Image (cartoon, rainbow, N blue to C red):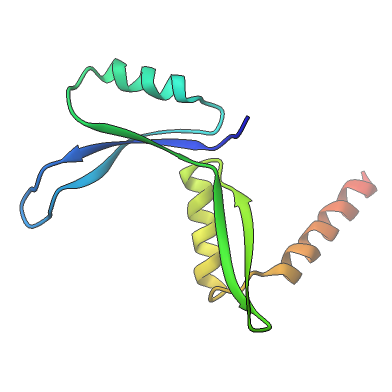
Length: 114
């Protein structure tokens, strides 16, 4: 069964200078289910038009050797997705593959010493 975090969004009519739009009102982490997202919405007890969006994968696309390379990763929460965005912006759109390999090697060596 696919896992991902859920965002419940509500449709809002034009307000002020903004046009009508979907506005996030609730987040549920990846340990939750669609059924629990619907139950949380029902518990709020507010009429309106809602959609439930499930985020499962984040795709990092970059050019490598003249070809587009796609790298997927799981997004388990809005915070996790924000960290991916932070890394993407910090690294200028280039995946820090070597940094990640070095970090995993350090962690593995640390566990072996225990």
